Amino acid sequence: MLPDVWDLVAPRRGLLLLGLVLMAINRVAGLVLPASTKWLIDDVIGKRQTELLLPLVGAVGFATLVQGATSFALTQSLSKAAQRLIAELRRKVQAHVSHLPVAYYDSTKTGTLVTRIMSDVEGVRNLIGTGLVEFLGGLLTSAIALIVLFRISARMTGLAVLFLIVFAFALRRAFKTIRPIFRERSKINAEVSGRLTESLGGVRVVKGYHAEGREQAVFSGGVQPAVVGQRPADAHRNVPDVAFL
Image (cartoon, rainbow, N blue to C red):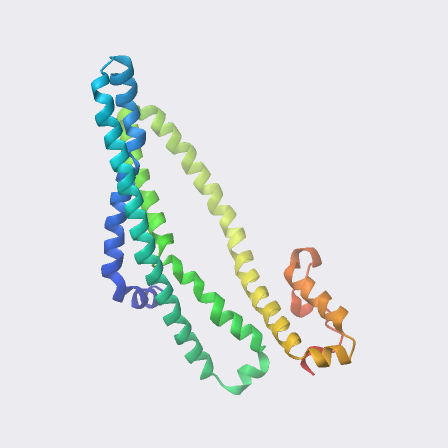
């Protein structure tokens, strides 16, 4: 999917570059406060150099202002760009779906298509938005902190890195199990939303057959599939589908 992703991101690479610069400034400014404790404890408190207190407070205050300004700029620029990207992708998905054959519409609920068009594209927000910036910012902060920790104590830092590697492998195995569950959950949510849309649209037919209880059971089985133990499409398989008569 990398070529498709690049086609979406390439027109906004200038904005992404600006966001990366702002992110770097933001992260460096965020490290000023924890770094200032060294001079506060060693010099101001330990050596009684009180004349350093005012410049130290000024540096921390300026860094805080820079951090707040860059965070606001990142939110305003990248969040708006992500919304425009999502809107563009929605238009493309809707155009693609509108050109599909009629047989596809016969086998797929209208509400399901609506949900997939409106909701599935939200995942693109992480490609150009605060999600990407937070990820790269975390990597930058970790790299700077790792260099500082190695200068303080290479042995203790190596031990901490070893524990992190073990934890990373455990997370990797956990995500292999969790990721398919979330993908399946997205499909189930689309099916349930489609069923709900069409059952509400055909509410007169539902009431005419006194099928309110059955529709409630199908909806409950979709929003809590772990409790019911089956997909919404499998629930009440042998009962006529009143909502689509």
